[in-house]
Image (cartoon, rainbow, N blue to C red; front, side, top):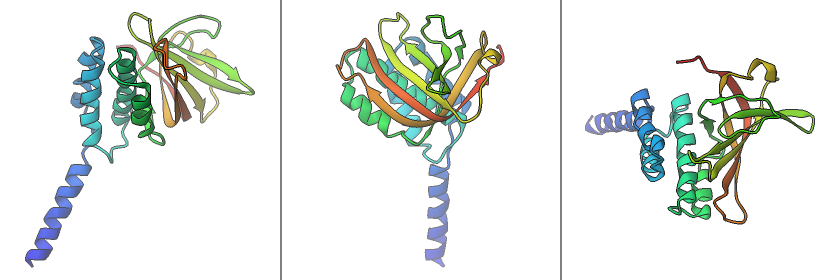
Amino acid sequence: MKIILTLIISFILATTTYGQVISYDDFKTVIPFLQKEDFKGAFERTNQLLNTTQNDSSDLRGIVTYMNIFSAAGMVSLGQMTHDDFLKNANKYVGQRLVMSAQPCIDSTAIGFNSLQFRMSGEKLQGSTTAANNSKTSILCFEYFKYAEEINPADFIGKNVRCGGTLESVEVNPNKSTIWISRIFIANAFARIMAPR
């Protein structure tokens, strides 16, 4: 009887530990780090959250996963992480869901950082974002989205749009410079218009 009781308690503890999800309050603890561009603090906090919520498939975990990759790229731009260490970290999340921050959608003929644009890639429409640091001296992530469903760009232009999907692959700048750090490729992507706050 003691063995059965011990097994039941162990099972409950294991499912409780690995069944935790990232809460909105957890997510909000990362934002001050990113606002100050304290990329190391954001990276450490997101690592902590991701390590305790491995079975969580929520949008919040997808956002925190993206924050982890973005903050690691920020660390590379500041000389706090190597390109190789960045790639090793980001590759842990290949095959997992990422949800990016909402960006304004602009026309494909415009030039803009931290904004979403739609362009043709061959015969398919692709979304792309150029995510930079606040001073726009380093592009932290070029983000490329292959959409799961047809997208009409006219529905999105001039609106704040959140994209996400499955992380397909990651590349780093082959020259190891900090002008741009990484390219991330997202498959089965979605685009959602965000309501103004």
